[in-house]
Image 1 (cartoon, one colour):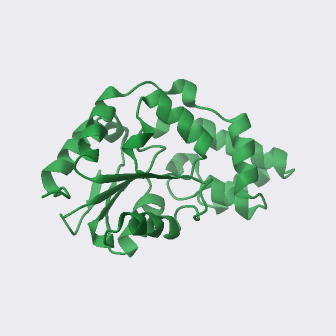
Image 2 (image 1 turned 90 degrees about the horizontal axis):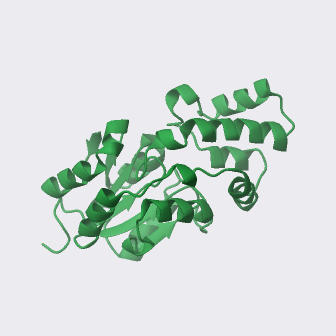
Length: 224
C-alpha cells in the first residue's frame, strides 16, 4: 500500500471497485483472456494481432493490467461503451467467485457514518450490481455510484471525479481516492489536488478492514 495524502481533513472517499473492494486475482486472468478473445472475434484479428493491441494499450498480464483500460481500448477499436457493456455482460461473469465479506461491510458501515462515500468503476452497472450483491454490501452505503454506463467519461478521465466532487460540494483537497491502479484511480485525483491510497498487494485486499481502520487513524472525519 502506498499513500499520497497531503490533507488530513478528508470529507469524501471515492472507492474504485474491481480489485479494490474485492481482490483482482478473482478476475484478472479471466478478464485478460476474455479481452484477448473478444478482440479476435469482434474485430477479426489473429491472436498475435490481438496481443499487440493489448500491449500497445498498456494491458499486459504480467503487469496485472495496472496501466491500461480494456474498456477504453475497445472504444478506441470502434465499439461504443454501450456495445461493449452489452457484449461483456452477456459473455463475462466472475460474480460466481465472489463471497460475502462481512468484515468489509462492517468497516464501510462505520466509514459511511463518518465520511461521504462514492463508488467509481469502469465496470458496467449490471456487473457491478451482481458482484456487490454477492459481497453483501448495500448500495445505499454509496451516495453516488458511477459506472461505465454513466454519462461521465471513463477513468482515467478527471471528469467523473470532478462530477462526484461537485455533487458532494467538497473541495478537491478534501477528497481521498482508493484504488488498485495508480494511473487510473489515483493520479487523476492527485492532479486536481486530492489525496490517494494505492492498494498494491493481495494482502492489502485480504486485510482491507485493517487498511480502513488505519485510514481512520490518520484522516479526520467530516463531523469533527
